Length: 251
Image (tube, rainbow, N blue to C red; front, side):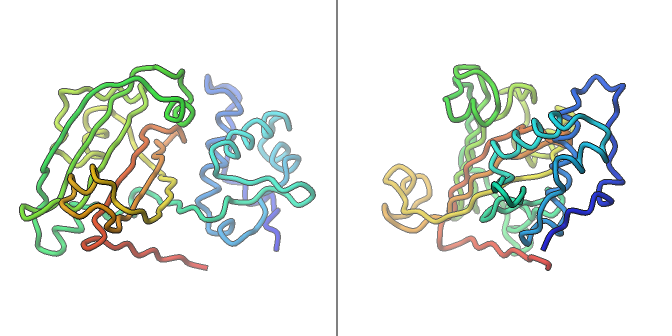
């Protein structure tokens, strides 16, 4: 079943007078379209030619924007078929996230930060590719071990794009995205996530207070701001005996 109806684009506009490059504007539009449930069941994205006509930009501009999202793993191009949303991914709008703090509060438990470490490091090749920066560029790294006073439940490791201008002296006791909005004027919008299970290494088991080899829920995500730019790369390791996630998917 195809959803190649160009009229779906009628609410999106490209500003030819803006300082933002056209392909970046188109990329932002496509990221918004990804959130549309119409594309979550295998329906095709509009064709390049339809996108270029509806948005009033060159076809090469559209192709460049699509290529960027294919590279990011959000879209898949199938020769002779078209462009579809990448399967086996979870796309979440941040206002729908139920934070760990709220989850624990809902259970009547108070969240405790067992460890908070903020440092800078040189971006690895993998991180540089995610952020589209040069390998070796300096990034801020945040490690948080969180749980209740009885025991830790998760280990979270975040890296922030240099454009976010996170500082080591900021108040990381605040909810992270509240801090970014209030202190850095960064408004997060969408998360692209991979969730899997793994066996705890000796180091991870030591942090979480479990045995090496115990099951751990592993959550890796790229967090985008309201302009569709990656601002955080995050890895979270959850104890397998205390956390579960439920996803509601509408047809």
